[in-house]
Image (cartoon, rainbow, N blue to C red; front, side, top):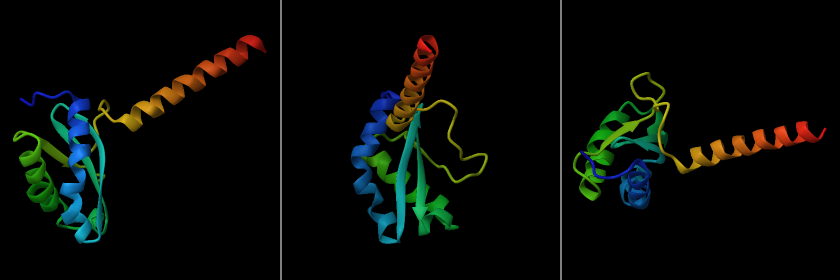
Length: 118
């Protein structure tokens, strides 16, 4: 079991992403950190690597291996590639997701206030 919260794990990966993404970058690809949930990191390969038939090997043999060495040996990494088995869960940690949720809550509050004073 990984002794980190989703938020702690997300930020640990975020801080180590430049070290891990060097291989992907060298092949004309890109790497985006999408979120974390229960010891699993969700990434998305982009650029040339996004549609590459070797993307699963890159995820497992390069990215996961390096993140396990840097952060925790039980870390799991999923490349969100549009397939049913490799998708983001409904609930996961991501600072950008929270920002979007907070924005929609603020918009809802503003609508209520406008309706109250209209």
